[in-house]
Amino acid sequence: MVLAVSEKNQYLMTHYFTFIKGVSPLVMTAIHEGHAVREELRALFSLDEQGRLREEDPFTGTWANKWDNRIIVNHSRFEVDVNRPREKAVYQVPDDAWGLEVWKKPLSPDDLERSFQVYDDFYSAAKKYFDELFSTHDKIIVFDIHSYNHQREGIIADPSANPDVNLGTDNMNREVWQPVLNSLMVSFRAFDYGGRNLDVRENIKFKGGYFGKWLFEQYGDDICPISIEFKKIFMDELTGKGFENDIRLISEIVYSSTYLVLETLKKTL
Image (tube, rainbow, N blue to C red):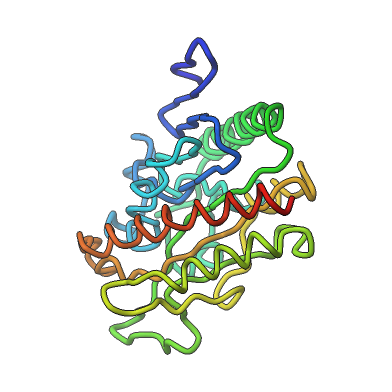
């Protein structure tokens, strides 16, 4: 399935995902960025394209793409969701997908197998990718970037339970990585977001998904997978239209944090 591999093994690219390998000990990922679906599935969807887009994470790939190490999934989570365990990676019933009726009829065994093959290819590539990074770094931090909806049926969710930024930190040894988490929290909270500071909290909406769990199972205390969930204040979540200034500001908040985070890694771990 691999379409291109550089001579120095710095990247792997398929129709479904992109892995770029640089030199830093920090990786940024956008595993729910994708919106594409393979052609033979298009006619099988009951959920329209706008409905799928609403539950995806548009613009997260824009932020991840500026870092030297990055992983971006190009196809929709509605084809296969690599942030779930394999047996739940293809949404088959409404309970798998926020009550949404995804398919007009159950998928055939062949359709399911093709999606599961993408899932297996992703994790095979991820294992090789991180093994190679660990050949040059003792510790690795992962910014697993996501976004989440805060409007349902025209009602804006209560801000007290829906922070601007949620840091999911269940997939790590928190005692080991506390200094890095503190640095990230301090940097995010201090950022001037158009004249205000963002509400940044930990494990309020999400505690981290399967990808982070898999990373921790593979690499233990040597890896720090942080699920960074931005509330969709940077876009109209109903139409999918992005707000240019907010997208820029979130890019800045992410990249301005890397200096302090990497300095903390260097000094304390």
